[in-house]
Figure 1 (cartoon, rainbow, N blue to C red):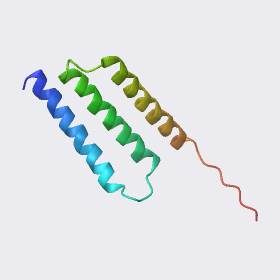
Figure 2 (cartoon, rainbow, N blue to C red):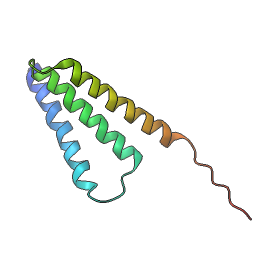
Figure 3 (cartoon, one colour):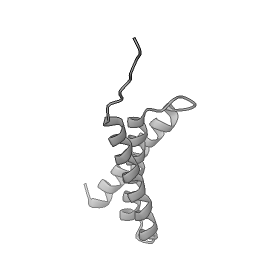
Length: 89
């Protein structure tokens, strides 16, 4: 498998993940982890586009990718924090 074929396969797989999450989350409540996975899949998809299409404005796409990865990271960090619930007895 050549490098271009591998990059195209990465793009296809990330696109399938995006479609799954968009289709699965129609009108329903989306968990924080699901949203983070979707953002990471979108970042990987865009990153593969940079690799495959040499005529894309790399700087703008990289800014968008970095934003998506940061948001996903922050989302997962927030999900890790324990949620303390105080109940009156």
